[in-house]
Amino acid sequence: MKIVQVESLGVSKQELDDAKLEFEKLGHQYIYYSDIPQNEDELISRMKDADIVNISNIRLTAKAIESCPNLKYLNVAFTGVDHVDLECCKKHGIKVSNAAGYSTEAVSELAVGLAVALMRNFSQMDSNTRKLSNRNNYLGTELCGKTVGIVGTGAIGLATARIFKAFGCKIIAYSRTQKNIDGITYTTLDELFAKSDIISLHIPANPQTKGLISNDLLAKMKDTAIIINTARGPVMDNAALAELLKAGKIAGAGIDVYETEPPLPENHPLLSAPNTILLPHVGYASKEAMQKRFVIVKSNLHSYLQGKQENVIL
Image (cartoon, rainbow, N blue to C red; front, side, top):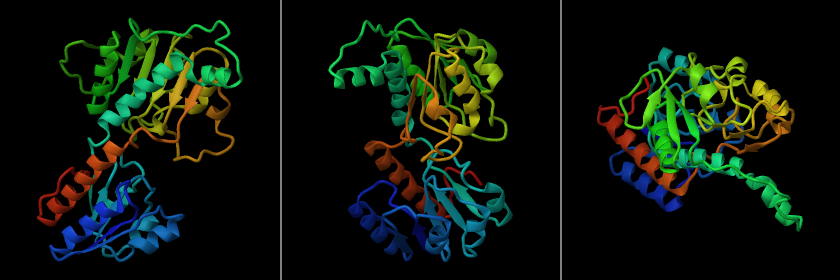
């Protein structure tokens, strides 16, 4: 089969060459690219003759999928697959796998790091120091003793909860599937937003969660509370969040994900909102996570080629 990896996936050329040789020894063609396609036409050009495509979080539309008549298997090197037109894949009988689990530590550590950075105001303190100033009587806030609301207790949500717990935080949680875990108390979403000092989102983007974190829900937050989103952008009403931040109804927000992948449009509401740390979707982007991801990508390929698909989405 012809396997096409449309980008480098964050690993070295040596690792890509090793993978190429690994699958060529099994009788398959393996083509990889070391850069990101600049537009959809270039993406289609790379994958149009492929039987199998390795892709990460590049948007994959019906147009791109239907431009690949030989495509049988889509190996998504990412946890979420909301950037892929799954209905089109289903229509054409294309199998889809993801790479769940590779970024658990990377994302959970970033979520807690964003909370610390907001509560100790790293951005302003860095700016003051560079301007040859001092703290100007600023007092930060400690994690210890705070109530943290975890929305979504999958692998990343639970890993985040464990780190917050190590700081001496009380953990409450909301999830469609509740688990019996020592130190975590489940509650309603409304109560979680009303009681939490820190809220950390860890839910997937799907029709049920789109816009779940609404204006009404955000308005229930304490004016001293902060919210962290390292999950998926469409789950939260960012325009409502921006307005509440500007009105001083929420103390701060750490955001790594948006409605679309960065770069953001210049009129995005969060760009002008105060007390925010905005990152360009880097939660998953650690050296360690990229290594784990590539192991999963290759394992997915081997399993599919042996007729035993892993990490099944479709």
